[in-house]
Length: 214
Image 1 (cartoon, rainbow, N blue to C red):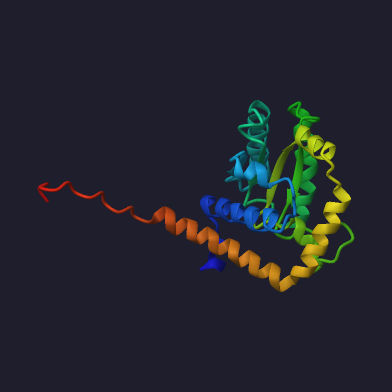
Image 2: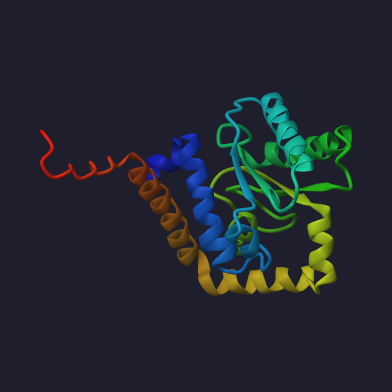
């Protein structure tokens, strides 16, 4: 069941699995020490693109850029745009990042927003495909994250050390190992299935008032 869900996601299951990954990996493993607060406060927007072609993804990304620029940070701090049906190959996805950056510039959002990249087959330059360190950016489905530059600057002012975070993440993943990472991924898929089952569950009928006619 979990494997089928992973291969043939619906928009709802893709978002649910991504949310589980944020909770179990990004926050649970402290891969991003600053992700917990926006998540708890409900300031993370999870969006799913139905695009099957890159041009359609550009249109969806443009919509999300405009939405985030217009929204106050206390409403939306960051946006995760999941796109399960396009750019499944990492090389094509990686090439698309230049398009995403150009779109920020076209929409006047350069300096306001930046794009962070996540993909199931993410691979850092010069890294082996099987290096567990790649898992720091391996999400359940291809995804583009829109970050506010002001939030990044605030984290730096608060003492965030990007190099130290990267080193800590690599150490965490090496301790977890490939088998542990696979278990975590399976848990995320199970969480998505559980969320689907809960959504499909029929709520119990309200109690009938005493003396009511059946």
